[in-house]
Image (cartoon, rainbow, N blue to C red; front, side, top):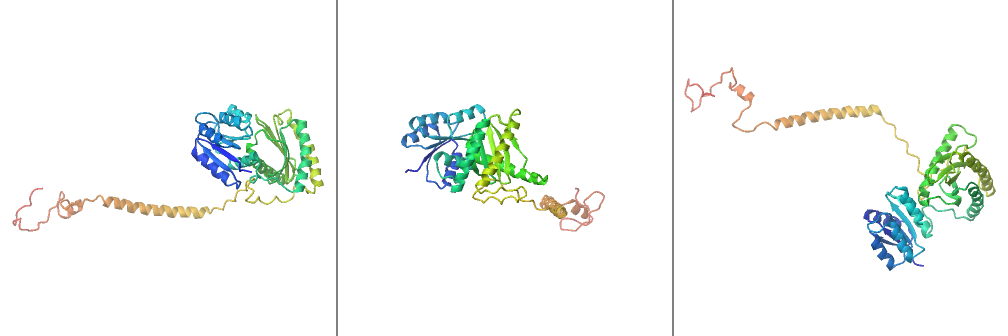
Amino acid sequence: MSAPSVLLVDDQRDIVRLLHSSLQTLGHELNIIDAPSGEEALLEASLRRIDLLVADYLLPGISGVELMHKIRARNPSLKVIFITGMTARKARAEMLNAGAVAMFDKPIPLADFLDAVERSLGLVRTIFPPESSREAEEHRETLSEVLGGLRQKIHADAVFLISDRGRVLARAGDLYDRSMEVSLLSALMAIFSAGLKVSRFIHQENLENYHVFRSEDHDLILIPVDASHALMLAGKDVAAAERVLQTVKELLAVRSHVEVVLKSLGVAPVSLDAEPSSAIPESEPLTPAPPEPEPEVDLDALFAAADKNSQVRDIDAFWNDAVEKTSNIRTNPDVISFEEASKLGLTPGKTMPVKLTGSLKPNEPPPPK
């Protein structure tokens, strides 16, 4: 089987180079072709089969959507990822409705981009790998049925069971836009972790915190199952004022069912009093690491150093000023300074001592000034 072909199209060469080098880091065998315009991309597509098109929405000449339609006329199975700097909702809706598997704003989040490439081409997922054990598969199938029932009951787009490491353990449906799934889950798990800390601070006996996000495209609701699992629900208006209480009530009912299923599969629930899980290894950079504590600052030492630096700067300024002044002293041998003139009696009110030379006669007054 030949390696999949990926066609990168953007008139900004630095973006093409960035995406090209990023794809090479995946370790998959890929044929990567670059093109700076839609017309050149069409020429490349006429010479070979293209499996994935990654194109800017705005191209010189034909647009990215037009390019997609022209290539799909020859290759209906073409997968498409759009990149854009536009934020207009109409343009974004056009890209998603055209059948793109993902859409990314510039600057492009590379983890999400590479995950979308792996998903669209059916490659082994290295950025966001699923669990692969047999127990995990049974676990996922059983829970997916539970989540699927909830999704249908409240007409949601998707319901996910997520681990504290940002892994999707079971899912029913998909997000409205899967482009940002990796980053979204990472951000949600950071919120989940912060919620656990608050629950411990206020000494909650049970996890009773809910996180609700409203959006024109779809709403998100996140509730904890235990200290290492959470349920996320996404859908149009599921968090609207008139629906949110009923939605949370249905989620809580499913949470109890999920806890039972997890126990039946041998997944022990993690209590609120348990220590937080260890940091995610470098190979799984999904949840942001907590910030390093800032070192204590010795203010007295800083002020002392500042005073010392100030003294040094004053001394340096004095000598720099002295050098500047001395550099302006005239070195012309025919010109003398006021101090020298005073010593010679050439200043007003003083008599000049006479030194006899061959050019002056005794008692002869000095020449007028």
